Image (cartoon, rainbow, N blue to C red; front, side, top):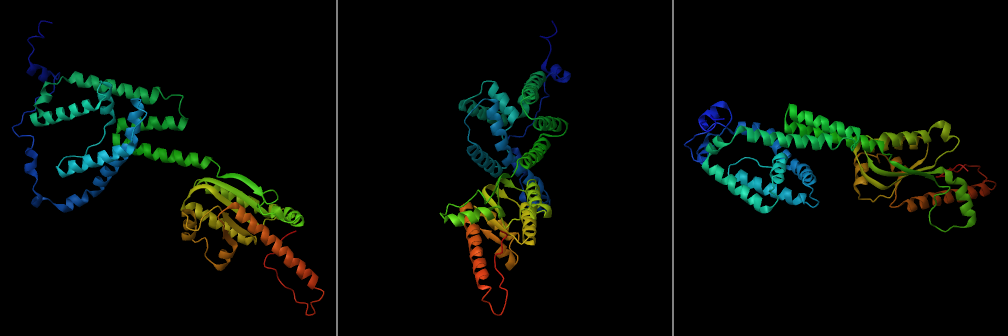
Length: 396
């Protein structure tokens, strides 16, 4: 151990124990001399627009990902993502105007800084002052930092983060979620941090599609035999409506209708209109109640069009309830061409509530019964023997 006191800093640098000295005569603001816009090849700048947009997207995306993750790690219950987004936007705008680089919250550095005891605003201000001082002094400070100190800090932080990601979550997450974490860790270690985030986003989208597709979009199926409107009717009318009530088929929908869930709904409708089932229990009105539907995409609307064709082929009516005329769902249905012909406009009806739809169906049944009764009584006095066709024919 006698040789340690005589060991010079140069020998330590040459042996790799201390970072090499970075000497320069340029002041910290010397890079501004390189700003000469008359020499800029703007076509090259435009060629880098995809990279700029990717960096901008990452700058916006990392806040709602890293800020909640950092809050969970340091056990902070209250945080404001909107405030963090505004702060990052202002800081990046000022940084760009001053000719500096993009800045964003670095999760690992923030965890290390806070766990070292810097958990107050004063610590942040002190860090900013120290960073500014190092910038003005120059890179010569790096030449006095032992390599083992930085390596130990990085190793300790990496170990804690790896333990938090893989060990602490083992058995607490679903298999797909845990596999997602492993894939993200491997991607970040083998390639890059940004690639890991992109892979994580892609797997999160896949997970959402799988989970949403597993959740049934049909929350309940009823018939008009028991699901009735609140209109008070004559006992004979009630008896008649109960007899024909099975021809009103109600499917209450929920959640998001998209390419992953519309297939199950379409299959249920096709099974109900299958010839073997339809001949035994015909349907006159198929009602989709959309009260609990959150959204609908183009693929789902295409499914609605196929269901429409099936219903018209069976000479039935397609009714969509619990929607408003100017709602996003109705606009999506109209834009996709659900109403293409006059027959479609007649066969597809919209109602603001399920009760209104049921009342319309019941009134149509009663109207048809009345017309059928009048035609039956007047057939004997019809000298010309002409047959009059009803607008709404029912199966009683």
